[in-house]
Structures are given as structure tokens and as C-alpha cells.
Length: 424
Ligand SMILES: *Cc1c(COP(=O)(O)O)cnc(C)c1O
Image (cartoon, rainbow, N blue to C red; front, top):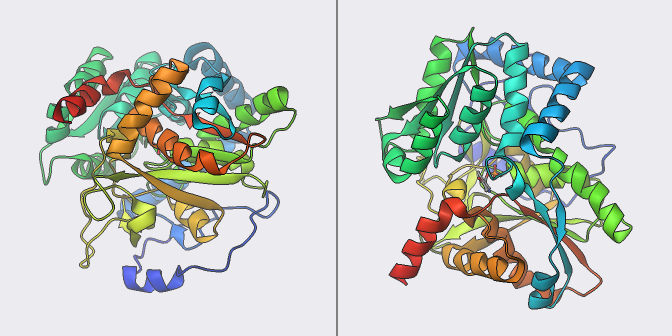
């Protein structure tokens, strides 16, 4: 197997991807990505040549591990005893009544160890690293949430861990830096460029290029070169699988009318949606960050972006006319990313997933709404999904069932929320 690493120009791409006719996606025929790691025209592996054999080896190791009983047993056991799965599916009766529309269920990823869904993936990748005999873990992190989830599993499995983080982000996210250090990880500042996530990613790739044999690069969302989008999605699929079984128990049917989740890179959304892709009656809704508004600073990559290459894959991207990556903005650090996973780009073009947006202000209101109706303080990321649902709910009926992915808890965001209150 080999993957193409020849970049297509954004211009050629936008022609190729210009709104095809809607296609039903059914479980039997949906087989993305293909052998080259392509989701339709998107995905692939646009990386330095020396990494191609490493990515090929990773793809083979992942497939073999996923098919092996011993890997499955270890993975399930850790998800159960360490992460705390299955997470509950909570019927949000007061939120449902407050919005006056559908019956709303929350898939409680906020109750995972470390407070969000990200650990489902880092657990899977560290088990794979161990199986491949890797001794050194690297990761990059923006807000620090993925860095913490990586440092956590590296501690648990006694592997050396280096997390690259923009120097500017380290200033803004001091608490997460200290968490990673507490867990025994080394946090290395990326001091080039804007000193944010983009630069940290470049540093991590540079590190991997110089130590390919002993190093495993843990990527935190359904982004990056093949096989990462497929692998991370697979490790997050547990969210949707559990939700199906739980909904069947509560409602007598496995399929909701609507499944809704926030989209940064897109991993909690793909994790929830994947199990429902083949059920045409389930409307799948991804919610991006509209920041200060779509005509101002935002992170609505699928709603406003164009195809281009970022972090080793072709997908939608916020870029200017010259193809320069624009800096994204969202009040929630986890959605503040100018790219998005290639599978989302593909499913958007197929019209299988619909994308909505919610602004900083709407998200702040939604944090309060969920806190005060359900006693659950959601992450600001999650609050974007709540906000979009609040807008849609009046058009739905009492017989409609919604599953919303409660991707994380909001404790980490309290200073941001308090700061926004002072400013308002
Ligand atoms: C990181 C994060 C997100 C965004 O990442 P996805 O890959 O889009 O899921 C959403 N919610 C929480 C709580 C996060 O920490």
C-alpha cells in the first residue's frame, strides 16, 4: 500500500468537490477511506517522504491490532476500568421541557477520566504504540486537552512523553501545562511563527522525521495523514455504539431522529455519527464555532472554508486567496482550529451530515442553560451543540428523539466563562 503525497492545487480541488448530487450513504456501501486513505477526494498523506513507510507500517499495525482478540480485550478492559465506560446516556428531561420540542438524551463523555472523549483515542493509540515496540510518545496540543489525555496514558503505560505546545498557548493554558508536567510529560514550547497549534504541529512532525523508528506520534482528532483519521474515528466509534444500545433500552429503538455534536477536528462527532451513517432516517448535525460571527473571526471550517492541505491531509480549510492558512477563533479552545477531518469534508459533500454554527455568545448562554436545567456544566465546545439544538428544537415535535454528544465537562472553562461575564 502506498499513499499519494502530491498536492493538488486548491483551485483544481474546488472544482472536483463542487456540490455533487445528494447520495444516500448506507452501511453496506460506505467503505471510506479507500486503500490510499482517501475519503472521496479528501484525506491522503501529504508528508515528508521519510514518513511514508512509517505511515504504511502504522496502517498495517493498526489493522492487525484491531482484528486481534488480545488488543480488543486490552482496549475494552482499559475503557471499562480506567476510562469509566460505558458512559451513561442521560435523559435530559428539564432541558427537553425548557426547549419545548424533542426528547433529548445526552451521551456523557464528560464523565470519562480526564473529563472528555479524547482519552478513548489516546488509550487506543498508546496500546498500539506498545504493541509496535515504540518507546517514545510525542503529541502536539493547542489548548492542552489532548496533551493532558496523552500524558495521562503515557504515565499509565510508563512511556516517555513529549508534548509540543505553542509558547503563546503555554502562557494561555498554564493549568494544562502544569497538569502535563504533573503527569511526568515534558512540555516543549514551539517558538516559531505565531507560537500556537500550527507551529506545535510542525515541531511534532519535525521530531517524528528525526526519530521515526522509536517514536509514536499520537494525534488527537480525526485529522492528519492516513491512517490517523480512520484510526481515531475507529477508537471513538465506541461513543455511537454505546448510544445505540442504550437508546434501544430507553426508547425501544436504536436510532434517534437527530444526532448532534460539536466539530473541532471532528472526532467526538465522527465517534457518535459513524454508527448511524447507514440509517438514513437519522439526521446527523455537526456544529462548528461561529466565534464572533461568520463575517468576523470564527472557526467554521466546513461552513466557510475551501479545500486545501493542512497537517498532512486534504480537507476543508480556512485560508486566504493565496492559500495562506488563516488563524481561527472560538471562545472554546477545542474548536479553535482552521482545519477539519477529511471524512467530514467527504460526508458534507455527500450531504449525509449537515453543518450548523453557533457563536461564542450563543455557547456562553448554552453553558448556563444546560447547567441550570440539568446540573451539568458542559465544556464550551459541547455548549456549541447545545446552542444549535436550542435553535432547532422549536421546529421539532415531542415524538422526536435527539442524542447530543456531551463531549466534555466545563470545569476547565470556568475562568474563560467568568472573564466573558465581566466583559459583558
Ligand atoms: C477537543 C475537544 C473537542 C473538539 O475535538 P473533536 O475532535 O472535534 O471532538 C470537543 N469537545 C471537547 C470537550 C474537547 O476537549
